[in-house]
Amino acid sequence: MKTQVVIIGAGPSGLLLGQLLARSGIANTVIEQRSADYVLGRIRAGVLEQTTVDLLQTAGVAERMHQEGLPHVGVELCFGGQRHRIDLLGLTGKRVMVYGQTEVTRDLMDARAAAGLPTVYEADEVVVSGFDSATPSVSYLKDGVRVELQADFIAGCDGFHGVCRASVPAAAITLHEKVYPFGWLGVLADVPPVSDELIYVQHERGFALCSQRSKVRSRYYVQCALDDDVAAWSDDAFWAELKRRLPTETAAQLVTGASIEKSIAPLRSFVAEPLRFGSMFLVGDAGHIVPPTGAKGLNLAASDVAYLWQAISGWYAGSKAEIDHYSSRALARIWKAERFSWWMTSLMHKFPDSGSFGHKMQMAEMDYLFSSQAAMTVLAENYVGLPLV
Ligand code: FAS
Ligand code: PHB
Image 1 (cartoon, rainbow, N blue to C red):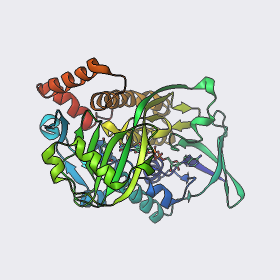
Image 2: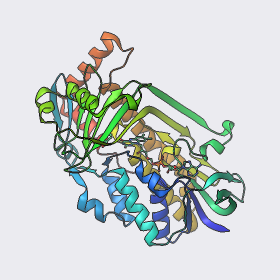
Image 3: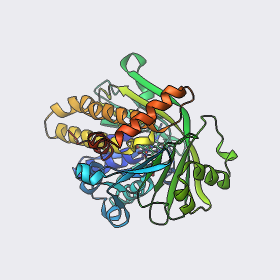
Image 4: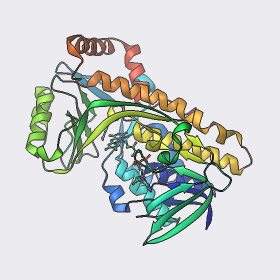
């Protein structure tokens, strides 16, 4: 069988790319190793940049987001027990949209199913080959039968542990990585958020984040040890630790309840270069990872998708230029988001080896940040998302 584009992975990268290509009349097949329910069960990002909101609008999947999403015009940073607000809208003229990645994925899955676009879930042993030749192909096992698909292009939207990047010869790719000495323990609970806006907390016991999914569903995180075991954290233990890291009056307002999801995510900064290998392209987490402190992971995946959609559409329209620039164009935005995510993580977390001088630098950075309109503007313009160029 043959198609124009084979997309590996039905996460937000793969589904958004498939949706945009289909609306441009470009045939594509999505191949996913897990079930749709499993993909939807992964609780991840919560904050969308305006560029991501605009792209979902272009893809025709923004209706529910506009109905249920929460536009946010400010964010708070808390240090020394004091909450300080960054006026995102006043400083940049932009806002962010709080709408969970699960809902974005659900909207994309529903749109793909409604359009009857070919999607293979629970595909085993996916193999990509010939991407450095004129005959790229993808094969996979489905119900014990091996199926082969020829294509013009392969989009590696298969995340950090996917098969596409792993199929590139080591001599053809450069990997840049920083692993942080801690993780995030996250809890999702059907309780009202403690605040209207997100609160990022720097505390001597470690980082914490108060986020949300709606007016009745909250998402909270506390920094934990890299080797921490989520089974060792009862709900009560989590809520008690979160309260220790919040200012007294905020902790007193915290509504607690049973967790509906609880997990630990490791933190790393990672970039693969380049992102193109013949007719195969790496997109989203397949090509890069950021610590979630800057809320950039999902949004970087969306900008990669925008660039690749434009590049492939241009190729079929007879213009080869854009496809040759996909990697450099995407990497330019990726590295700026990597910098911001690394900076926010370095500022907000407790590092085991920072010592008293390192802690003093964090406090001085925070003190300067809230004494300078210019410094707050720098944070705000990165948080709402840099423009697509
Ligand atoms: P994904 O990993 O979402 O999707 C890849 C898909 O490919 C998966 O469905 C996988 O099953 C499939 N796949 C893998 N190998 C395959 C194979 N061999 N064959 C077929 N399919 C294959 N970002 C934020 O902005 N904020 C956050 O708070 C945040 N929290 C996160 C927590 C965790 C635990 C993780 C891992 C990431 C988090 N992220 C966060 C980042 C996350 O949101 C990603 O940026 C986003 O999922 C990227 O989407 P994709 O590139 O589609 O990758
Ligand atoms: C979330 O709501 O999951 C979230 C929000 C902001 C972040 C990270 C995670 O920086």
